[in-house]
Length: 302
Ligand SMILES: Cc1cc2nc3c(=O)[nH]c(=O)nc-3n(C[C@H](O)[C@H](O)[C@H](O)COP(=O)(O)OP(=O)(O)OC[C@H]3O[C@@H](n4cnc5c(N)ncnc54)[C@H](O)[C@@H]3O)c2cc1C
Image: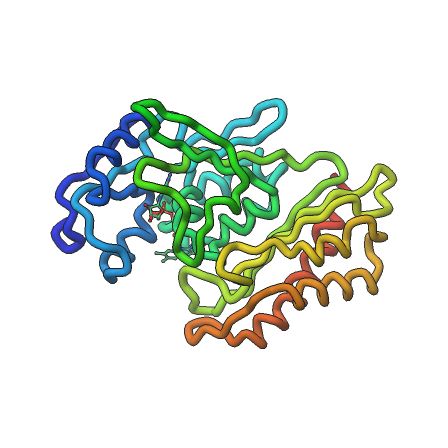
């Protein structure tokens, strides 16, 4: 693909967040952030995104491609690729639903360049990496240029979604990274999705579960369930989470109630490219029925 086909004339490669935000502020609506380009270039080619003169590549910014651990958090730069996440031993151990969700994005070529920041910023309710992050209760770092100074602020992941394909970021803002608590003893997570055999890009349904067992490992102490697409933005199944919290682990009635609660809360739609809403409704039961026992087994062993 030639730049002329997508019309940009300048490609900037800042090495600091300050520099990237200053460029975005300088060019205003004529500039756009690019990371792996796997969503953006296709959108520009299909005219879903207005053409821009300047692309600001954020993947060479120091720290943007790092995965680090502090005493409390695992921190992932917005420029970390799905391949990096998939291969990270730290994340496999402490964020299984994220490695599993990023590990199914596209094929290896896509995963080698596509970033977790792009997956979230593109703001599709079914984006796989986003669903994994949501079950981990991740926070997102929003970087804002204010009076020539960069203010970096952690906020809940869901706070940056405005609707399908729309985020809340302004021209003077970008995502710096994500952070979440590593899963500890008695905790575990799992992700799975239903995809058309020849499907590209987005699943029929994706679902991630995170669970914590009590000290005796008899009851579920806390639960998080993320589902996509199940509404205009990535979705937390709070009613099903409430059913599970405090419940005995493998009780069939509890499982059935949790599935019924999730099915009554999701907002599903039919898509001519993927599946009917009735099929998606049935798949909520299939995925939750598969992932709850899987996460429970992992939590017991962790
Ligand atoms: C063949 C193919 C298969 C795919 N399969 C899947 C799949 O199975 N599951 C799935 O979820 N997705 C899939 N995708 C979509 C895509 O690969 C992912 O959403 C990817 O993570 C996007 O990341 P990127 O780095 O390429 O983003 P880009 O295309 O570079 O950017 C996407 C959007 O995010 C913005 N952006 C990027 N980084 C930042 C930042 N740090 N701060 C603020 N805004 C930013 C850009 O301006 C743009 O609006 C597929 C795409 C292709 C082409």
